[in-house]
Each structure stands twice: as structure tokens, then as C-alpha cells.
Image (cartoon, rainbow, N blue to C red; front, side, top):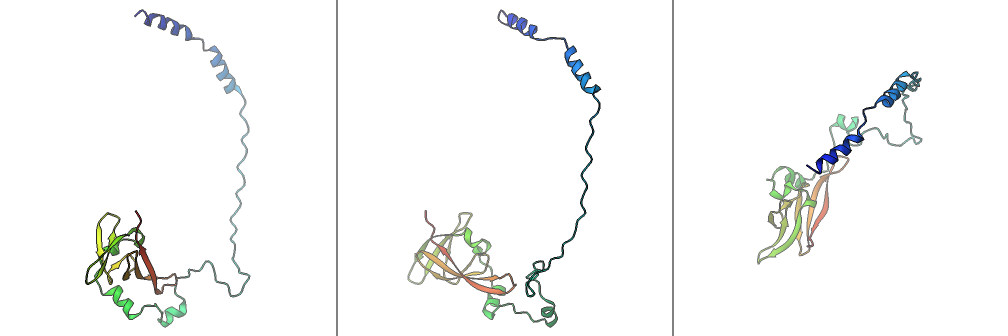
Length: 178
């Protein structure tokens, strides 16, 4: 209590009830004439621009490159690039578990070899370990395993190119370093 009383006395002396200066300043601000507000800038109308290439044989950049032309649609003949083997692999087979992952999310962690075959050991993003052999599929692009080596797994993927044609491409999954 002895300490609290002097502190309260000192604090009470800091507070002033005189607000006349503040009220005078507020009244001065309210009595000033309003300032002129600048008008909004004029909005310029949109002018459409018609693109014209300087080359006669240039491709129109606004036309979608993957749409079929009227001639292709009229004839009904479009070359999809699919071979019979590719059609069988796409349509007539059961999907394997590792085909639900992107190829770059899978990690090769080793190999297992016995008298009959060589197996690759794959770790998926969830941490599950899988055993694969030549002929199995993995990755979302119908990646068929062609070869298994101690340091990599070679695959053949079937993908659609920007023209809408199916094509094969080589891919590999290297042994992951620790």
C-alpha cells in the first residue's frame, strides 16, 4: 500500500482535463472550405486489333493446334498413330498398382535376382515397397518395363503428342541415391 499510493498520486498529476486546444483544432479543420476534387480521367474505348501475319504461310496463333481440320472431319480419316500392339496395351489389360503414380514420384531402391528372373524394387510415394519384373507396367503413361539393370529400369511409354497422335517414347528410372 505504501508503494501504491505514491504511484497513483504521480500518475494522476499527468492527466489533464483541459481539452480546449484539441476542440479548437477540430473546429478549425471543420471550418475550412472544402477542397476541389479532380474529375475522373476519361476512359478510352477499347479498340480491337486484327492480327495479320507478314508471311502468307504463317500459322494463325489464335487457332488451336490440336483441333481437327474440316477436311479431316469430313473424310473421317485421322491417323491416330496407334499400332495394333499399342491398342492392345491401352484397351485390353488390367491396370497395375504402380500405374496410379507419376513415374517421377517412384523411386528405384534396388534389385533382386534369382535363378529365373531379375526383379526391380520400387518405393512409391506412400512408402510401400513393390517388386516389378520385365513386362510389368508403371507410371501413368502406360510405361511397360523392357529391361531391369542394377542401376536403372528401362521403360517404353505410350503418350499422346500435341497433335493428338499416339507415340512411343523411351524412359528410365534410375537407382535412387541415399
